[in-house]
Length: 566
Image 1 (cartoon, helix red, strand yellow):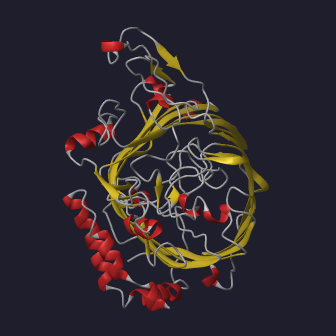
Image 2: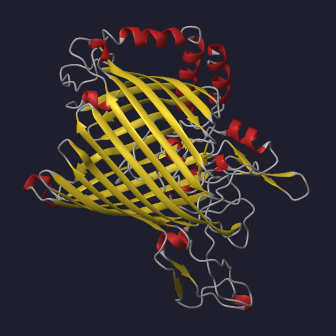
Image 3: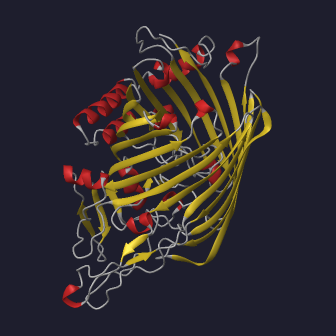
């Protein structure tokens, strides 16, 4: 069994296809080559971590070394084993928002090993260095070996540069209780990328400490080509070597120095999928090959939305699959408790991004000319609205999250470009998370945003598409940590779905998704080997027809964390 799991040859083959930048492929190939040469010893290494864990120090905050950089100190390790057992398929909240390290199979699991030196180790320095390798050996997953994370990163003052695949957190939402972000979510595997960022809020040198800024710009490449080939059997639309671009900026208004309890955060998140080669059915049993651009101009059109997709002539929108969210959060922070309200306004193209569209074209010979200042204003719909309450001291109930998600509108049910005889221009049917050329906003079968949009991995027809993106949902999340050793969470979601505009359900469908989960940190003054061992058990249930009927299942996770100081 172990020999089947540790199949590094296939990993090297997949990773060697990355062709973004010369130094980027060098780094990825270096990691793949290292793992390939270590394949006979890696399982021994995992076992060794379990043995050494009794002697290694538990994971504790460390003081920064301000004298000289020691790249082999404060290396965090984690060894984890997980098993899931379900009656039909894995329930939603046992599968979703786990960075894609999950499976729908009745019985699935993995052994996972992580070595990481976080950038926070060098807090107090002008510059810092971080790196990490995170590998899982799964059973009944979409691939035999998962390189979940493999990255190096550096920091100079407030700015950072990350090269590789790294799990990034959601912004402005509760990581464990929210349904998830609509754009930069935590539901799919990380995309290998080059990322420049202000990872933490930086206080602007004016406005007396009331304005703070953070954000990032990243370019990378999707890695699920092999999964797409197998899932579609190359009989439906699939895409190879698709490039990925994301950017985000967040502005915070508040001043903790004057003990102001109120703060406001506003942000914009955007993603573009471009380049690569897409294969689209031609209607006669053949596949039409559509090659996207990969030049400097194409990278610029991803950054500042522009250009046009291949084969677009008269009617042009923008190049690639462009999507994003407007974010806002208002928060009150007291001595022992806090609460906030927030909004995540999703958009798939410029009409829903700006809530208006130009509609003043002429007719006849002037049908392409702008004749008057006329605009179409769209309804302010399609967003995630949330409320969060936090009680800071240890208590049975510490956090409560309530969310409302509406995605039915999508700029309206009608799309109509102006013609020589009809000057009216209406941009509707935005078809969230889908695209007519690319396979949509997904990675390895999981949507990269909010998992309430049904991921393609649920499809049984071999087509990579989000088949339910018009829905209304209500969500409740409750969590607590009654003491320093135990915490728990409960999630309950009710969803009504209408399918998509192009392929609606014959009647409205519904779903109820439940999760009860608890985590306990083992501890003993007598048995020091127990320090750092966490045991987590969760039970999930799905009811309804959106995800394919009744699902129920149990998941057990055992992990050990600690520090190495070499």
